[in-house]
Every structure is written in structure tokens, then in C-alpha cells.
Image (spheres, rainbow over the protein chains, first blue to last red):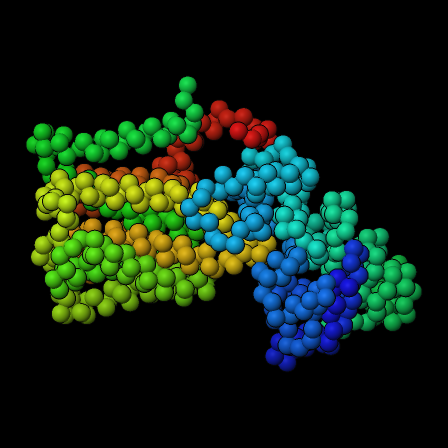
Length: 248
Length: 326
């Protein structure tokens, strides 16, 4: 399994945000995690990315326990998160944006004195990556001079520059709308066919077409897990979720 | 035709040579007084540049930077009062004191963001200010005299104004080169990225706080050395040097010169102190003019004086989406 979560729990005072959650995600799949507001989706992303520490439970990433690892160590292991809205470095150029993401993998130290511009290996890798996300002609443009769509591509490039084995995407549809989110996911898919993706999303309809498997989260616990068809037909899901959302 | 890079290098070499020749020129013209003015400009250029590393490149609005400057000055003066007569020792001490205190302030302050960050740095700066106001044995409110400048060695007499001028010029050059090296390094790139978007930097695997704290410590070392130089220049130090209003002055210098621009600290210090020199002899409320000039500069060019050149060039520049590698 790419990600194996068992017995995960997180409390905020009296609120049990995640309760005894277990979930398996197979390598190379797109797994969607959906749930209404307050289901604990954002908490789960924070627990998986290492931004918050879990109270109990285990998280195994490709067979290795990571629940006590820092966010930095998890990124190093290849578990990378992205954000709802486009998140880039506006005043840096496209090349610098990608280089800063690439250079962390190449070097352990801070690199106080050697010029970043002479870091040939990182620059070449950043330029190649820019080509792959379709920004090869814009290496010297500042992030804030890019069009909306190009920023999206740069955002994807920043994540891919970390050489991820698994990508945690936090509600991409909320930030960009369906069509664009579809585009981004298929861009990532075409660039890295073997990448495992956990797509956390509020809206169920949006993920039916994209996801290999879907898990429904309600009040911090898994309500159902299966293929799109199984989820669609599940009477409990229909009652708890689709009924109130009015999805057809 | 020179490349852009060698053009700007040429400008700075010319400026360096001009600064190096200035004492002879001033003496020949009978204007010895201005040697002291230029020494002050160079010392403040070092502190303003060090603040620029935190404020401009690191995006941290530190309102206590004068504390590190003053601590360096007091460290130097107190060492001399207690008999230290080796300038290398005094400089090292000032650098260590500036660096360690900045490390401590940075460590605490970087736990916070925004307005809280400003408040914490302001409060910690004022803490050091009141510490020296209260230290009676080192002059308290009245300040502390440095009886002599500690010896430089090499058979040079640092008490002579021209030797001291040369020493400050070399320090300014060294610190400027250090800053240039630092901001163009991988560290510098990462520091700017932290300023731009800290949560994204965390998400791509950086320990962002480490970068912010280190920037603080390096700036503290630079400010400490500058403080020792100012104490030696005036042969006097007072708690006023650590006061928050001094931190404000340093911030004005950086904003005037150009935040996050390599030469911003230098330009800001030079223009501010020259304005002070000229205006304060005519008007007692000269600050009002500095304020107006600062407003004008920042409105015309957000990158300060260092960004003015680029402003004129931008009009003739090619559209941005045709960018290509050099």
C-alpha cells in the first residue's frame, strides 16, 4: 500500500475531529476523499502532511511508519501536499520558483556562499521541469507576471519538483472550479503516471469521473469506501450525503 | 558595449575608488569635517544593509534592529574601558554579542507573525535599551566614553582619521560583498521564497523558521561590527543608539534605498544622512522633509532609490511573456 492509515484519532478539546480512522490507498491510484463540511477532511490532510500531530493511530507510507516524522521529513520521503488556491512565489522568476523546490533535494546544507545561479544541476532540472509543465518559454518571467493558467502549471511544477511518490491535494475544485481541476489532475497524471494521488474534496459529483476509488468521510470516521459505482449505490451514503446535497 | 552586469560593477568600482580618494580631496579642499560625515554614512550603510537582509530579503519587520547595533557599540566600549587594547579582539567581541543577541531575539520573534512580530522585536529592543539606561557603572543615561581607540597593529595608528577612514571603508566593502554573496546564494533564494510564501516553503520541505533565525543572526553580527565602528568613531556610546526610534530611522533608510535590493542599505544610509546634514543646518524640523522625500520615492518606485534605474528601463522593456534565458 502507498498509504496505510489505521486507528487514527485527533481531538481538539471536546471535539473529536478524526475518530478511529482506517484507510488504505493503493499505489498509482487516484483516491478521492469526500465528505460534507466538518467531516474532518482538512484535519486529515494536516495529519497526513505532518502539519498537525495525531493523538493516536498509525500512518504507514510505502511500508514505513511516518506518524512521528516532521513535515520536512515526510516531504523528503515523497509525501507532498498542495493547496486549495494557487501557491507560488510571486516575485521570483519561473526558474527560481522551480529551482528553490529542486535544490532542497540536492543539498543538505543551507548553501550560504555558493551562488544559486551557478547550481547547474538544480537549474537544469528546474528548466526541464518548466518544459514539462509547459513553461519552458517563460523561465525568466516573474511568477506574478504569469496568466492564471500558467500559475496553475507552475504550482504543479513546484509539487513535482519535490519528486513526490504521493500527492495530497486539498480541495482543488474549491480553489479552481471543476474544469480547471480536471485539467490539473490530468496534467499531473500525464506527467507522472505512477504517482499516487489523494484528492480531498467537498463535492461528490466532481470526483466521480476522476477517482479510481472514493472514500466517504462523515464526522471524522469512514462511512463507506469503494469504486464510484459502489459509492453511488450505497444506501447509507445516499442517506447521509447525497440526500442532503441533492445530487442526482 | 558592456553587459548590464559589468556596467553595474563598473559603477561600484568607480564609487569605491572615489570613496578611497575622498579624504585627500576633502583635506585638499579644507573640508576635513566631511571625512567624519562619510565615515558615518559608511557605518550606517553596514547596519542598514544588515537590516535589509531581514526586512527586505526576509520580509520580517524587525523593529528592534538598533539594539544589535547598540549592543555591538557597548560591547566594544566596555571592553576598552576594561583595558582591551586590541581592535581585532574588540571587533570579534562586538560581532559575537550582536550575533548572539540577534539569535536570541530571532528565535523568540520568529514564533510569531505580523503585528506580533513587530511588537516582540520592539519590546526586546527596548529591553536592551532600558538595560543600558539602568547600568550606572557604564554611565547609564549619560552614556559611556571610549577612552582610546584600541590598537590596530601593523604599525598603523588608528587614532589618525585617515587610517580610521580606511578601516571603515574596508569593513563597508567586506560587509557589502558578504551581503551580495549571501543574497545570491541558495540560502538567499530560499530566504526570499520564505518571504514570498512561507506555507508553500514548508510544503515543499523547508524548515522555514531556521532560515528566518539565521538571517537574524547574520544581520546581528553585521550590526554588532558596525556598532563597534561607530563607538570607535565617536569614542562615545549612549543608550539612545539602542532606542526604538533609531530602529525606525534604520527602517526609513532601507525603505528609501530599496527593500530587498542589494545596494538599498547603502543608498538609503547615504541619502538619509546627507539630507540630515544639509537640511538640519537650515531647518530644525528637517524630518518633515525626509518624510516627504521618502513618500515621494516610495510612491514613484516601490523598490526605493535602487529601483529607480530599473523603472526607466522598464518602459522600453519587451513584454514579459516573451522572457527567455540569457
